[in-house]
Each structure stands twice: as C-alpha cells, then as structure tokens.
Image 1: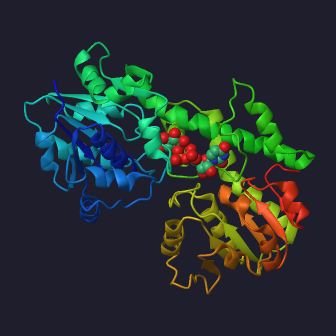
Image 2 (image 1 turned 180 degrees about the horizontal axis):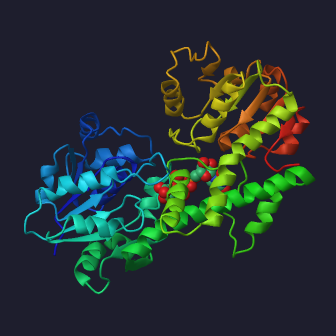
Image 3 (image 1 turned 45 degrees about the horizontal axis):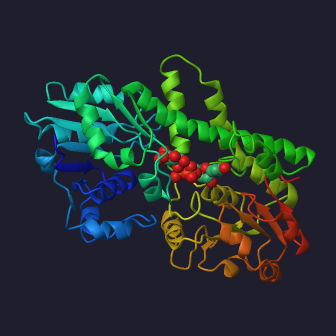
Length: 445
Ligand code: UGA
C-alpha cells in the first residue's frame, strides 16, 4: 500500500508537530480541528503556540502538501488518521477521554469499505486503544498505539531525533498495519532509531511509565534536597556524583520547586487512577505525586521562616512558564507560588523571558495593561530590572540560564534587600554571595 493521504485530528501541540513533521517527510497531510479561528491562522502559516522552528516549517509546507480544515469529511480521502486530541485531567485525576471518543465518533461517520489505520498519539490510559477498536466495530480498520515523547520547547528536535518509536498493535503477527507504520516512519528506520513493536497495553503503559519514572527522579532528588537543607552540603554536587553512575544517569536530577507542565502532573495522577481502578495501590508513584505537590509549600515555608510574616512584603518572581522557552503556564510552579504569595498578602512583581508567557499571565489574572490585580498587588513587567526594583526578595521559579548572566551587581543596587530564593538552583551560590546577597536554594545548605 502506498500511503497517499494522511489526516491528523487535533491541531494542538502534538497534532501540529505531527502534521508538519509528516509534511516534511513528503506526505500529503490535512490537519483537522473544530477550532475555526486556529484553522484560519494555521492556513495562513501562523502557529497559535510558541515552539522553536515550528512556524518556519509550517510556512514551508502549508498550501502545498499541508492544509488545515474544520471538516471531518476529509477522513473520506485518508488512508491513515492520527488522533492527537487532548486528554486533560478530570475532576478526580483521571484522564478525560471525552475528546478522544468524540473524535472517533466523528471519524466513523465517514468510513466506508476502504482499509484505514487510526494511529492514537494522544496519551491514553490502558485499554483505550481496545475501546476505540470496539467503537469502530465492523469497520475495515486497524488501531495503532503510537505514544509521543516530545518535550515542549524542543519538540521539533525531539520529533526528528526520537530515542525510540513505540508502536502497539492488536495483533503483532498482522503485518499489514506494521508495514504501513514502517513506511510512514521510514525516515526513522533509515536513521536506525529503535522500533518497539508490541501490543496495545504495553505501548500504553510505556508512555505513562516513562513520564512517571522521570517525575520520580525529580521527586527523589527533591526529597534528598530536603535532607541536605537540614544538614548542610550542596545537592548539586550530590546530583553530579549520582549522575556519573551510568546506571542512574545525569538527567532529571535537578532539585527545585517541583515539576509542572501539561504532562507530568496530569500523567502521574492518571497513572495512579489506573492502578486504583484495578485494586492495586501504586505506593511509589503516589509518593512521587505527593512530594511534588508538597515541594512548593516547603519552599514557601522557607521564605516565611526568613521574613516571619509575608503580608505587605514585595517579591520579584522570575519565571512564569513551567519551564524555560515556552509560553505554557499549565501547572507552572511559578504561578502556584504567585497564588500562594498573594494569599499571604504579599505584593508580587513578576517577569518571564518569553513575552508570550508574560502575556498569558496577564490574561490568566485578567490584569489590565498596567498589570494590576487584587487592588494592585500583582504586576507583570517587561523588564527584569524594573521587576526587581524595590523588592524585599527575589524568587527564581523557572530554570532560565539567562539568569546566570544578568548584571547581579546592578540588581543588587535596585532591590530593597539583597536576598535570592533560588527555586531552581540556577545561580552560582558563591558568586552571588560575594556580591553581598543572602542566598537560599533548594538543598544548598
Ligand atoms: C515531558 C517529558 O519530558 C516528555 O518526554 C513527554 O513527551 C512530555 O512530558 C509529554 O508527556 O508530552 P515536558 O512536559 O515538555 O515533557 O517537560 P520537561 O522538560 O520534561 O519538564 C517537566 C518539568 O520538570 C518542568 O517543570 C521542569 O522544570 C521540571 N524538571 C525537569 C525538574 O524540576 N528537574 C529536572 O531535573 C528536570
């Protein structure tokens, strides 16, 4: 079978990367989404989200082998349909599969006798691929689980350089869908990227287990950092030494104020629910989640211990996005901390290097253009030096490397009190102390 037409349902973060990536491989791709405004933007070559290199690639292909539409009717002409809709968290912490099921029902309406493949890229709990196949009962279709491992900010780089391609099938002895997926991902085969060909359930678990494992590494080092904080020492040295053991590895061992984003918090919680619904208690994964939820309160208490009362104190919060170089505020620890500080009666001046992250913050709190909220207690500023002016303390909430190279001498002259709470351990502790700052990190003595 020669793949001619591919459609991608959902033009969010995953769907958009998948669409432009497949277009770059040379396929004819149609992106489908119900959001008319987004579709119009995309057809004009404008991305609604910030991701390095994405707009260039979109512009390169849109109007040629890539277009976007709100019409599910396109499915009629598609051989392969990638499902990339969101699976947000419901009120109980489960993955909400509403968008998945509604997309499947919309797709089904346009199925005829022609053989098709549905590839599920959305992060879905165990059993969902099987459920989708059941919903399509009687259709000439194979369902393939193909989880994504993209990181925001470097998603395109991750797309073209994956560590592995995971493909889950109903029957691993049925070569038809396997061969088609290999044809679509020939670029990766040629690059000798390992392919994991497995069953649906394993593929579904791999995605959650990968995220939960990385989250556990973070919570683990955050827990060790608390001990270091009590006894003295430096967690950065501990992490470095741990990481040099190849069995441990040096990635995701940076202690801080916890993980945020649209994936780790939600996926860890959804994984817990998947255990519990089967009567199993996931002790370790639960602890990962608990440590993470607690971490920001632990850090706030550290700040409180120093000042006694936070009421009326002014802070510069540096970092709004959940991690550097994205505009994404979802589950951002910086935003959580701002909420907590405002509740304590503090005045918060905040800043992020990414302009769109600042704009999203203004929108989130429905601030006017002067950045006012809670009777002028919250200010979003466009300049880091303006942000630190006359504050009682600086709090770093996102691990921006640019912070290292800021003029800390100048900053020292602008603040009311020279004190930094480095929630991401990004600064050189000794250098900052030499400049007369008091320094508090996470597990840095
Ligand atoms: C994460 C995974 O890394 C991707 O592999 C996965 O595909 C994605 O979720 C997803 O499921 O879609 P992402 O959410 O973009 O990617 O962000 P990460 O770079 O993994 O960072 C997550 C959070 O962990 C950030 O808040 C970051 O500050 C924090 N973190 C990371 C630490 O606190 N310490 C570390 O050592 C590393």
